[in-house]
Amino acid sequence: MEKSPPGGEPASGSGGAPRPAPGDRALPPRPAARAGSRSGAPRGGAPLAVLLWAGGVLLLLLSVAVAVTIGPARISVPDVWSAVAAHLGFGSSDLSPIRDGIIWNLRMPRTLLAAVCGAGLAVCGTVMQSLLRNPLADPFVLGVSSGASTGAVVVVVLGVGGGAVSLSAGAFVGALCSFGLVLLLSHTLGGSTDRVVLSGVAAMQLFSALTSFVVMTSADAEQTRGVLFWLLGSLSGVGWSEVAVCAAVLAGCLTVCLAHARTLDAFAFGQDAAAALGVNVARTRIVLLCTTALLTAALVSAAGAIGFVGLVLPHAARALTGSGHRRLLPVTALAGAVFLVWVDTLARTVLDPQEVPVGVVTALIGVPAFVLVLYRTRSTS
Image 1: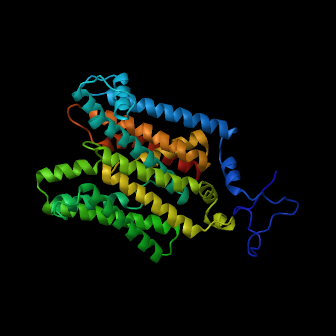
Image 2 (image 1 turned 90 degrees about the horizontal axis):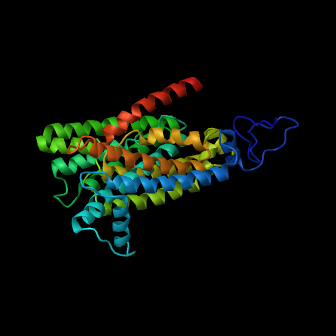
Image 3 (image 1 turned 90 degrees about the vertical axis):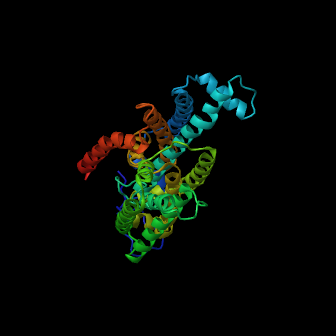
């Protein structure tokens, strides 16, 4: 059986890299494809990937259509298709203005934003787990969520911006400030993977403390209740503008991640192996960390802090596709979208007319899955 050194096939001209054993053939210069095949990807990957993508898209469309019908007002799936087609310019609708407004202005934007947030958080988790080689990494490990929370609290409670700055804008700025601090700390400490994680933990604790301080010293009871509800994740009251912004950011960031799919496959063997295979480790890490931070900031600014989606969904998707990121990233995005659509539907209906924060439901589902991941990590270590 052909074997290669743990660091992968050395690049030509690298004098210090280990040489292959005598009699071994040189490995082909496409390590990413071999990385996927050696990490548990199913055989016949292309047909299986097409099947998974097609099934995921169909399941997502059906989930959105059915989720919009669930609520106090009685609406059917044909009503949903009729309203959507009419607003897109394909025919007219016989629905009353009230029912049409419920579908198009209330439930559809919320359901679509849930799909976008689920897809984006799942993609961020997939990239970060591969980039940091940590199965427990999720989109909030860089402190982005805590920074967004602080930014939102500063705008709502302290009134920074004089009403010209919205809660979402404040959350976005806070998220970027937090990530900037993480980059500065990790670069000062050496820029290694463990330093990035530790810097993220430090930023998370700092901005969480700042949020608590502002709320305790400046907020009244009503403001405190509203801020805490948003911090736990809320999709209520969103409109088409939030959907458009988050969807555009998701499309751009997913494109960047897919363009680095083979590079992420190389990172599965470690940073030294990726460097030996010709990957610019520092540049790739900065690009992908900035991409995931930007996407997380946009999603958190619109929907609040929704945990465990980026932690659990990548592991479920890997069980279906293997570790090849060209297949894994789209499947993870679809799985996260479907998952959060139904979680949000459950959150807004289980205690109707009272609404449960989405982050509470994802935590109740995600904690058992998190424990399972911990056990699997321990058994393979």
